[in-house]
Structure formats: C-alpha cells, structure tokens
Image 1: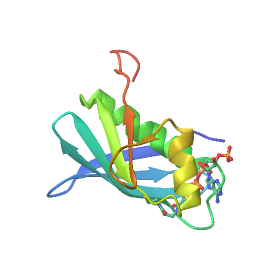
Image 2: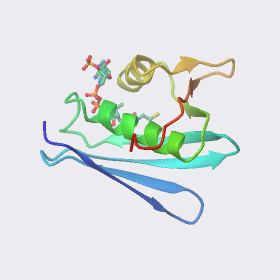
Image 3: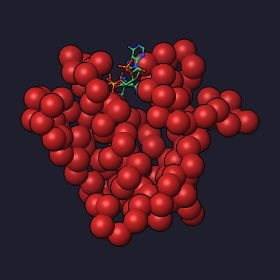
Length: 115
Ligand SMILES: CC(C)(COP(=O)(O)OP(=O)(O)OC[C@H]1O[C@@H](n2cnc3c(N)ncnc32)[C@H](O)[C@@H]1OP(=O)(O)O)[C@@H](O)C(=O)NCCC(=O)NCCS
C-alpha cells in the first residue's frame, strides 16, 4: 500500500485531521485538546474504503500527532454496539474507562527525529 497523507489544520475550536490514501481511501476526524489529553471525535473512513487498514493507519497518525504536541492520553466515546469502531480502538490499545462508552489510551512520548 502506498503511503497515505494526513493533513492537520486548525478550525475555530479544534483541529481537523484529514486522511488521504493514494489508493482512494479518505477519512476525517476532529481533535479537541484539553490539558494533557486529546479527545478524538467523529473519526471515520469513507464507506467503500473500509476494512482495508485505513482506519488503523489514520488513527496511528492521529495518535503520533497528539503525542508530538504534548498529549499524554487520548480519549474517545464509542458504543460497544459499534463493532467496527470498538474493535479498531481496542485493537489499538484503547481500554474502557469508568465512564460508560468512554475509551482511553496512554500516549507514548514522540522523540525528536521520529517524525
Ligand atoms: C470504524 C472505522 C473508522 C474503521 O475503519 P476501517 O478503515 O474499516 O478499519 P481498518 O480496516 O483499519 O480495521 C482495523 C481493525 O478494526 C476492526 N474492524 C474494522 N472494521 C470492522 C468490522 N466491520 N467488523 C469487525 N471488526 C472491524 C478489526 O479489528 C480490524 O483489524 P483486522 O482487519 O486485522 O481484523 C469505519 O468502520 C468507519 O468509518 N465507521 C463509521 C464511522 C464510525 O462509526 N466512527 C466511529 C465513531 S466513534
């Protein structure tokens, strides 16, 4: 698979992430930064391009970006009934938090030169 490109740009209240794969997979998400955490909202890959690994690659880039900007943890809300999303997030290391439908992941530091 050719390398996808992920753009990050500021909107008024948050950062928007856009994923573009040369093969045609597109995705998007919003990142809300609060303190040392990033909340990932409306994460999605376009229908017709799912189950090809784009979601996993996109999330990896989002998490790297958040770690690079100093975030120590990532959070998101998802119902266990949303099987594709729940499985993707838990596969990537997110684990349920005490709040219902809330998943969290501790972020590893991104060292200079890794990016
Ligand atoms: C959730 C979503 C982003 C996954 O994107 P994707 O590109 O299809 O995910 P990937 O191909 O990278 O899959 C990675 C892993 O997620 C899990 N997964 C993804 N889709 C799945 C499905 N339909 N059923 C079961 N597991 C699934 C699997 O564990 C998969 O790993 P595997 O292929 O080795 O089994 C996509 O389904 C989507 O956009 N859904 C609609 C929007 C949405 O509900 N977003 C979540 C908001 S909280």
